Length: 480
View 1 (cartoon, rainbow, N blue to C red):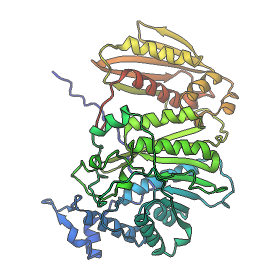
View 2: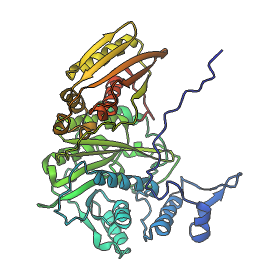
View 3: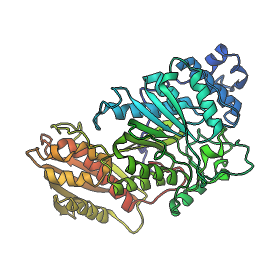
View 4: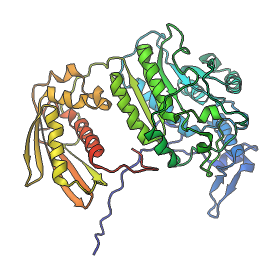
C-alpha cells in the first residue's frame, strides 16, 4: 500500500511582514462602496466574493489609483497603455530595501546628511517606487526615464502630491542613436504581473544567447559627478521582444515597448547595471534590481562574483501568483560583526535533493560532500558504508567555504571569524528516499563552539553546490 504520509510542501515566501497588505489584503467590496469610480469594475462570484477582471486595463488602473489614495493618501494617474503597477507587489520591494539599509551590513556614511536617498532606474509614468518610498518612509529619490510621456506623467504624479514633491526629482535620460524602439507601435499590450511564471519559450532565449545591452544610459552618464545614493532600484524590461511580452492573456497591466522590452531582455539590462556599478563603485551603498527568471538570477550572481563585489543578497517576492526575485550587491566593505556562540537555533538542518539525474546515486553525492569541504581545507572522514562524512573546520576553513558563495559573505567577515578559539565539528548524512530523491542532513556536534553561528550558512552553501551539480533544471515556473 502506498504510504499515507504526505510530503511536506516547501513553504513559499510570503508577503513582506511590514507590507500594509500582509494582514489586510485589499477589500474590493469596501473600496467599491467608498469610491464610485471603482464600483463598476467589481463583480461577485457565486460564493459572494468580490473580484475584478484582471484582463481589463481600466480595472487594474482604477484599483491602483484607489489603493494609493485610500491607503497612502497619494493622488495618482497614468494614461492608457503605460505600465500599471500592483501596489502590494511594489511595496514588497520597498520594504526589502528598508531591511537592507537597516541591517547595517554595509555601514552608512553621512554624505546625504542622514537622509536616505534612492535612485529609481526607469521610474515610468507611474513613478510608483519614489511615491511609495517617500510617502511610507520619507526617502528622497531621483527617478530616471527616457520617454517624454514617462517624464511628463511622472512629474505630474509628483506635483499632485505636494506633501512629498520636494523629495522626488524626475531626471530625463538622453537617448543615444543606438537606442532601439519599434516603429509604429501604439505602446499598448497585455503584460502579466499576476502569474507565477514568465513565458517558457523565453527561457531558452535568455539562457542560451549572450546578448549585450545597447540603448540609453542606465547609471553611468545619468548619475552626476559627486552624487551619492544609499541604493538604486529597478523593475527592468523582462522581455526580448514585444511579441513575447504579450503571450499571457490572463492579465492586462499595460506597458510600453520601452518599459517591457530590450535586446537581451532582463539579463542584458541588469548586466549593464552591474557593469555601471563597477564604474560607480561606492557611489551607492546598495545596487538592487528585480529579476524575473531563475536562470537569469543564477547567471547574474555569477557575474557579480567575477567583478569582485563584497556582498550579494537575494530574496523572493511573492504576491498572489506573482513571483519575482530581488538581487542586491555592494562594493562597500561590510561592517565587522562578531560571531557569537549559539547564533543558530538549530543543531540539525536538512534539505531534499529532488530530480537527481539517473547516473548519480547517494554515494556520488556523499563523495561530492567530502570534496566540497576538502576544497575549503576542512578535515573530512568519509564512511561509505553508513553514508556519513564527519567534518572538522577551523575559522580559516569556514571563511574559505563561505567566501565561495558571496550570498553569505556578510555572515562571515574575514577578520571576525579568525578570533574564534575553537573548531566547528559537524556530520553530514545522505539518505536515499525514493528513486531520484535524497535527503541530506547536517548535525552540529558541538553547539557551544564559537563558530556555531556559521553552521546554517555553510549548510545552505553546501545545498546550493549539490543542487547545481546533481539536480535537473526545470523549465517554466521552476523558481528558487
